[in-house]
Length: 307
Figure 1 (spheres, rainbow, N blue to C red):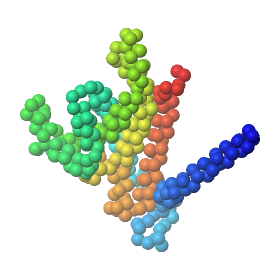
Figure 2 (figure 1 turned 60 degrees about the vertical axis):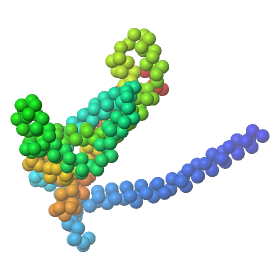
Figure 3 (figure 1 turned 90 degrees about the vertical axis):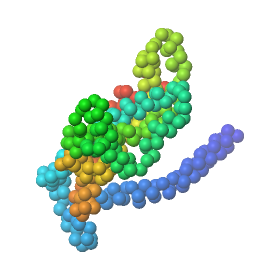
Figure 4 (figure 1 turned 180 degrees about the horizontal axis):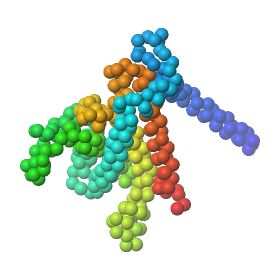
């Protein structure tokens, strides 16, 4: 009897596995044809010189596109530095900003739902419209920010997007303001922090900072890791500020890697060179992601950890 029952359970398990694999087939097909094959094609194209005017004009040049990017290209190396600089400010700024706002919105305050919607709204707005609106705020002659700084604090007018010193931090500030999605995810994480831990710590005499640092942050570490990862990947691919506001200027101070890729592909029609840029961008994102995963083992905890 037991053998029959075991055989029946094994058959049911095999049927479930077969059904699961069948249901996964459309996803596998989508991944292969929409992700992996285009990725392989871009990688292959990076070894050719091609302007897109017919496949018979493709010329195999090996690693020359990569060599040119790091030796003779007037934009690429500087764009790497600018992109990493922007990402550093935007990622850490948005993490701190969104966590603080989430902590405030998690408290019992009047019209809490309204304020949550207000802080999430920027994330839903069209990105180009947002950057054009901020362009008005940043305007050196009639922008609101310069008017306040000059009239109220007596600060000389600042070229937020016209000065090489300020353009990247100014653009990163917009990215930080747009991080409403991170606020929502942090809010969800805060609501799942076990109340019993916080109450027990309060009974033991722990103040608010100790409860936050030793209980809330460890319990939130998987959420922090997820937001950090998503923000890192998103900001390394930044392109909208260059397209909508600065066109890579002043000089090359806001010419991000994705904007260089866009210019080579769609303005200069150097598709082989653009493919090489995209491969390097992919490798850069992979390196930062690998570093994040490797270092997360030392600070990311879950309730099931022994420590």
